[in-house]
Image (tube, rainbow, N blue to C red; front, side):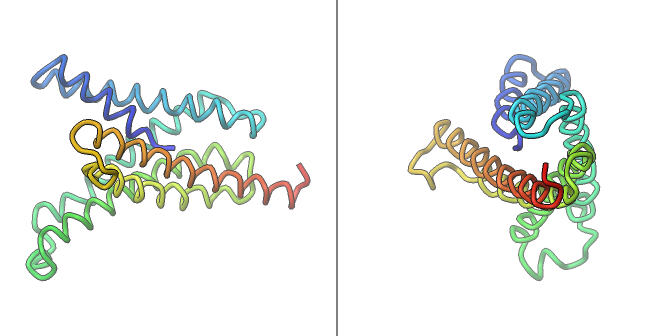
Length: 193
């Protein structure tokens, strides 16, 4: 349930239309709009299964979780990028360190989004804390898939880029969908509703 394809598309379009420092601001606003749009789409599906879940709370959770996660990911990655971890890069290889940083930062972002959404879901499900773990794993899977070239799907160029992001969205949606179905099933068994 991550907004990778929508965010990426809106960011690219905004950056193409407005250049320079203003383009960065427009791109950031476009990405926030993308997160809000995906949050709204998620809510449209979620409300069919979870009564009394408000759209505003879910959309705000998606936006604030993504922003907080991005901020935390920057805090996590800055020491590594500044080389404050000593000879780690030399010991395991610079590309391995970068791979680890990217994977950890997406896990952090996924966890932050999951935490923000957990604040909404906990009112409806006793075991909603598992949503955080599902979101973290989904964030890591999304990173792996969105950072492929598309050649893994037999495609290259822009079509490969789109295919990689679609695969990411499908996998993340499936994983978080399975987590939500599990939460609902556990809730039914324990509370009969």
